[in-house]
Image 1 (tube, helix red, strand yellow):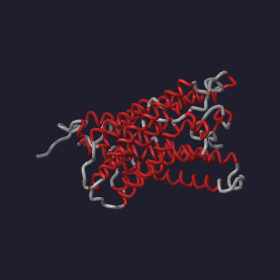
Image 2 (cartoon, one colour; image 1 turned 135 degrees about the horizontal axis):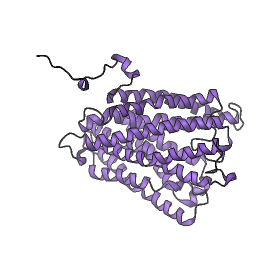
Image 3 (cartoon, one colour; image 1 turned 120 degrees about the vertical axis):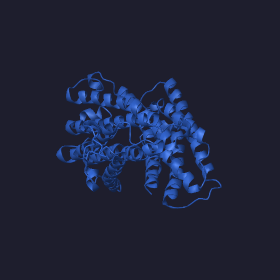
Image 4 (cartoon, one colour; image 1 turned 90 degrees about the vertical axis):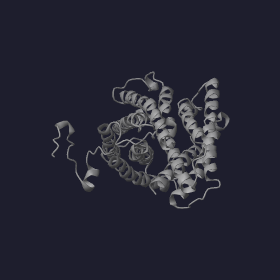
Length: 407
């Protein structure tokens, strides 16, 4: 018996073999691997930029990179590592590959939107890197604070803004897809409190992405108006307010830390039980701690601005809110250690990277609590103490979990 397929039932022919990884595929597994490989390529570029930075800092004088070039390299390094390596891989790569399997779905909720979300990344990355060669790249750091971002060469800064807007659009598309998939495509009978921990982590992350990324996008559009049309949104010489830019920027960019870290929390919570031969300790408290981090992560942004003339009541509020975020994070550390306690631990590569993550992230967390205290922060703000804190979080933390998850 032959079955005739109507046109709407026919699936379009897609390339087979390795060519499908270079195509507009709607298969969540292919897209996950596309994210992973693309992210790793940009990781190598970002690492080369980091090597150039460290080489320049070997001596007090500018003997390896001219000052303007150093600023360009520093800006590109931060932007590449955050927007083209950690966020796409820890969210897009593992999320696309694993979540449909975890919830029992055939694919993501919006497969075409999923493919669009990935294919925004390579042109955005190439645009960003090419700015170094075709024009003066952005020189104002990955924060792009005005008035510096308004007074440095405009071409490189506008290319930087366009690249980040494309990457932000990719994140929003992905976040919408993950929320819809986890909440609406679960197999019958799979309750929310039975989801794997990575699904909860990605649900919380996607909520942060959808709520905070549009704020960054709007802020950068206004900044581009200041650069191109000479408006006065953030330019103090035209009556603008640079501190307002900082509020808007950090309203996204502090949650961005949890956008990078929460999926890593979920992944390590999947890895540890397997390699310790024990169930995850305290599943329910882990779920509530993720949601607690999501809520608190949206109300702590101004702890980046204690030296910007914030009034005392605001300093007090953000100090308390930031200190509170250590509570759900501490719960997670306790539960990971309790999962390992008494387990039959297999010390393979995945487990060793996971243990390295726990140790490094403790340093990142302790220094974060220290930076939340105003009397300490005003003395070490914009010093290498902050740089070290951030790299303990994103490199010793998230990147170690990426390595563990790949193994």
